[in-house]
Length: 78
Image 1 (spheres, rainbow, N blue to C red):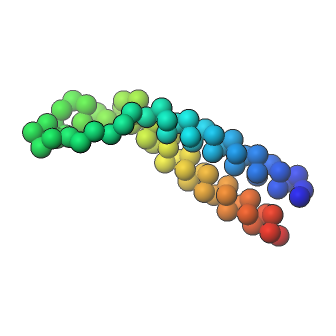
Image 2: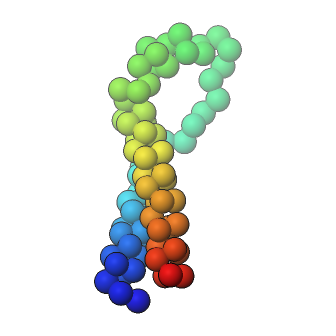
């Protein structure tokens, strides 16, 4: 394994740890009733709350993690 393989492997591990921490920081999702729905202040401004921000980071980190996994695999196989 060359230095590129090691760099990709270490980056994958670091992103995986950060992704795990971000997912664990999110609060559990609760079912919203039909009465409250998205008409509440929290529902309409969810992207500005901590849960909304963490949700966006989760998606970005998951995509980066998948790309790093594929890159590491192809780098090692090569």
